[in-house]
Length: 219
Length: 203
Image 1 (tube, each protein chain N blue to C red):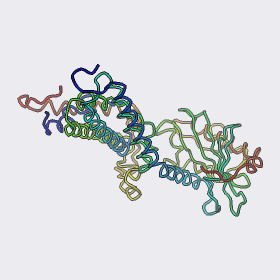
Image 2 (cartoon, one colour):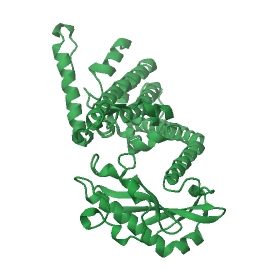
Image 3 (cartoon, rainbow over the protein chains, first blue to last red):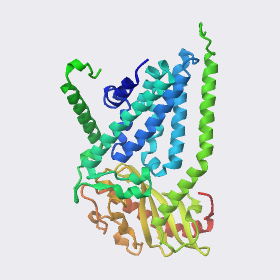
Image 4 (cartoon, one colour):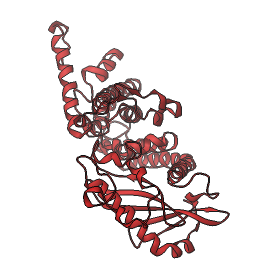
């Protein structure tokens, strides 16, 4: 039995899906043009991870091992379709912006990886917590990268917040400097790779400074 | 072969999970169907209103349309007042964008003057070609009031016309200007036939 603190620490930092496992990079790089896009996809992915880990763990005692992978794929696909329909019903604006990347959550390897390597061997509570923490860790990377690229690319923060939070949030858009000409590279795909590289370097730098005796280093 | 555990056969486990998944998905679909349809209708109505004269029509153009398949224009929405058509919105597309297809809504009034143009979808370069979006620049607003009466207008400046091109992106505005021009020509040639077949439909 893994301790609650260990699970939280692994998902949010030590074994973060975006920064350490480097899983699910396709949506991570593609949608992070703004903070709000990143947050939207992060929430959808977190819900999917939470539900899939819970269901995979709940079925682990009676699911024959030889068919576990097709069963996980069925479970994950059903959950993602449900999440997609719910987003289309309640967050229609954001649903339109994220487009193909919501159904593509199915192919996010982070979800199948957590099902296979953690949820299928752990009790339901630990599995659910792991799904939630991995999802939040992934969301944090999406939001940070989205904020970085939005800020550098267009000089704004929280553009499109009304898509997620309703009409009044439109006024929350922060303009950092009037007449900021924008830095095109940050908004384009190369900006996503460079931004992620900076985040990875930053994480490694932080860990390198920590005393070795603590014994917490990236695997 | 399930060994010592009392596990069900593999086919049964898979069938059970498939049935459960299908059931949950179907239930969610049924539960959200009306809401999703209403959202889509509202989004379409808002987009049509952007290219139609406000307050000039009393029908719902989102539910008054005709589908076409003989050219770039794929759908025409009709705005009416007291049953008489006063304007139309043409949904058209051009493959000549820098990043692929650009789809547009072109609002045209009774005498063939453009009331407004909006880009529905495109894959143009962010920061360069995406200035065709109304929320990024007011370039696309320049179509309002133009008609086939100004034949020389229908080109970007570099090609001898009156529409600005963007620094670093000539292909995108050229494609949009060309698509709007084609839509106007199509409307002039087929107006009567289209209006005769348009009518109330669910969107």
